[in-house]
Image 1 (spheres, helix red, strand yellow):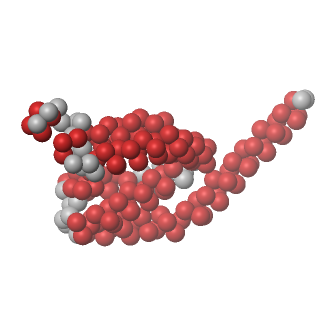
Image 2 (cartoon, helix red, strand yellow; image 1 turned 30 degrees about the vertical axis):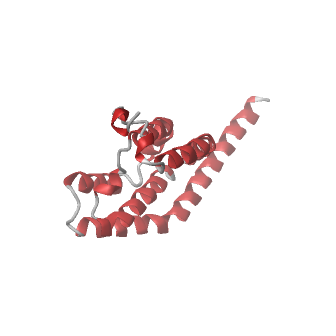
Image 3 (cartoon, one colour; image 1 turned 180 degrees about the horizontal axis):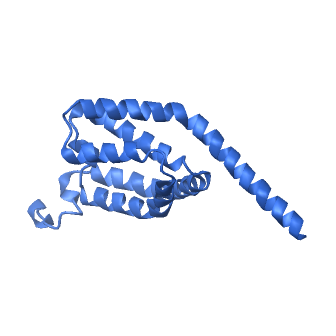
Length: 168
């Protein structure tokens, strides 16, 4: 390739990236408005802990921050391992700290904020999508096994090293 072809190819790639980014912004706008409405509803409830209020404010403040899209792309594998470890240890979902009538809205808010933040960068969104697909393919069989073991009677509590109380 000649220099002019390289320059034109890079220019076309930049223009395409900008166009995709613009389209993603337009597609995500209604969802972001729902995110703001849901965040306001949760904050107006005055029933959340200070940590949850800070978390919601942080997510709302960074809904358009492209840097965090790349942070998510870099940390999704680590977060998946941390979540699996928490499930193995039997730790509750952090959303369970919310009052029960707000829990569904809080979980929806977290999902919407993730999509909103990742949607700020098409390249980071593609990386996150690929990571989530790989994690799902790898963990689906393991997740199914974990759920089945978790439903077994208490004598099969592998994570509590006090198995002697079960008579063996």
